[in-house]
Image 1 (cartoon, rainbow, N blue to C red):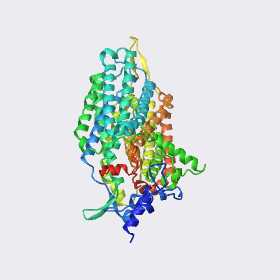
Image 2 (spheres, rainbow, N blue to C red):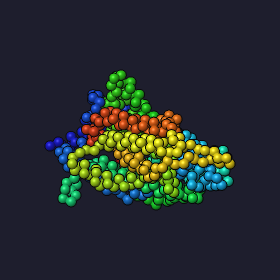
Image 3 (tube, helix red, strand yellow):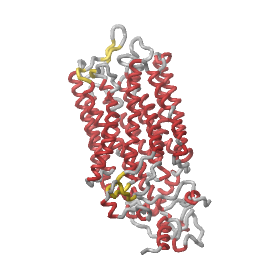
Image 4 (cartoon, helix red, strand yellow):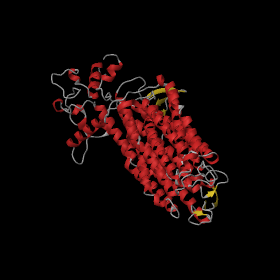
Length: 612
């Protein structure tokens, strides 16, 4: 049996903190914060990383148990539900407003209306190309801002206070949107447009700051950090933190879609029967509940302080590795302090070996995210082109922008089914439905949704009184404008693309949130999450290239092209990352770094113990 002294020495050496043989006492001065004996540089692979299973703890599963026992989720804490509710309020606010953008931009102010309300609500009358272009710009800017929000949270304010900053900015944005759509302003086309753009940009800033931090704050409340064996209903099972995180993000996404669903359904009817200014005002009122909920639960949250910017340290480490690696082989092993002689160690090398492994894992996740813009090309059709498509069909009193709510409805229905039936059933069968498999499946479903949209658009063109110009606007003798009569197809025939893209979101988008949190270093979680969200911005920028196809008679080609891109992208994604399937457990169970940021390894732990 290994002695306690040897175990202690092994732990010290493997942590990359001190020289086990001398118990951390050296005669040589250190250039960095850690004294570590020189070690040979190992080959760069997942086998080199240190896992939590290398440690001893209560309930630790054996290798055989890891392979044979069923894996289950841990508890979802009450504090998590309160954060998810705050996200629900924010999504009601954002989607309840953004769902109005397409009609506000696309259609003109109805005759005799001073609020934009009417059978065909509108305000600016800029046409479908402008509506699609501004919708894409809105998504681009909203998902660019998380990069800034993540930096503020990680380096300066912490996630909790950055969320409050985001709420304040978004509230100002809603007030501006209310002014832009007020009766006194909306009749002045140029003034309304200028005010609307300012409100749109401001809301994007608040949304970006919020999105970068709410999901990491939620997942940080998870108390399960290591797999452990537990007996449930007479069965020995493994409580797996990865399974817990999957469940957390599923129900987080459920709350997102309940918020967006209620916001979108409610506001499009307010838009149609009352006017735009009231439709922009109501989401503001609900959003103001969010800070009250956060403050009421503040003492129950696990809040991590800002750690200072780690980007400079990351780039220094990157270039340090680049100089010491061959052109063909980039080895992060050379950046581990245990592999750098003390007299060669730069002063900025204050991290431990485990942090290098965490950074490698985070970069691996970022490479996976590079394929997400392909997925979001399909998703982005829903908020622009598909809404316009619905306006060319028989509505029977239903607002054209209400149909897109089939997307969140399908998500709200499918998430409990997937959580309680599909995922547990696959685990019982021994099938590992890993993140890479789930995301690949999401790509394929997204491609099918665009096939359905292309087929629907073809039949609209064939049956429309205006033929392949179904969005044509006629100018009447009195100078007023009238859209082409709808194609004789019930708008509810459009349900299939929305339902399919909703199912695709669960497998691709929800999994990407989970992947971003689980693979990021502890002190860079907001940053890695923001990189994930930034892929939506990249997709919106790419989508601008498709704007020329977002008009008659080219919309069939638009949907067909996006379908082909999604299918090819999903296939390429699988072949690029299928090797990560076999390494999933190892990357999830890396030993946690003690490097906090401003502090050096071990200082945070000593501080918690009251030693410093």
